[in-house]
Image (tube, rainbow, N blue to C red):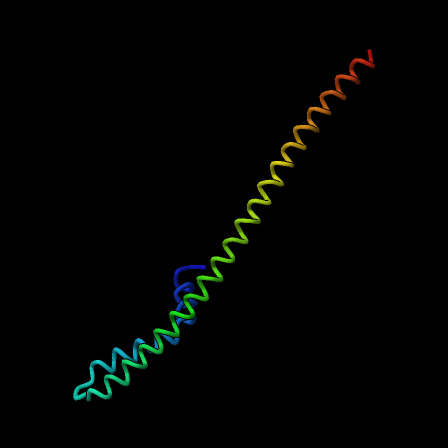
Length: 107
C-alpha cells in the first residue's frame, strides 16, 4: 500500500474528527459570537474529545491484548523451533550411528 492509499484510509477512519476540526476552525473565524455560542460549542468539543478519548483507550487495550497474544505465539514458535532443531540434531546423530553400523557390517 503506497502513502496515498494509507492517507486515504486514515482519512476514512478519522472522517468524523476531520469534519469536526473543519467545523470548529470555521466557527472560530466567525465574528460577533456571543459568550453562550462559544460555551455551547466548547461543550460540544469536550463531548467529542471525551468520545475520542474513550475510543482511543479501547483501541489501545485491543492493541495491548493483541500484542500479548502475538508475544505468546512467538514464544511458542521459538520453543517449537528449538525442539525441531534438537530433533534434527538427534536425527543426524542417529543417521551417523546407523551409517557407521552399516559400514561396519558390510565389511
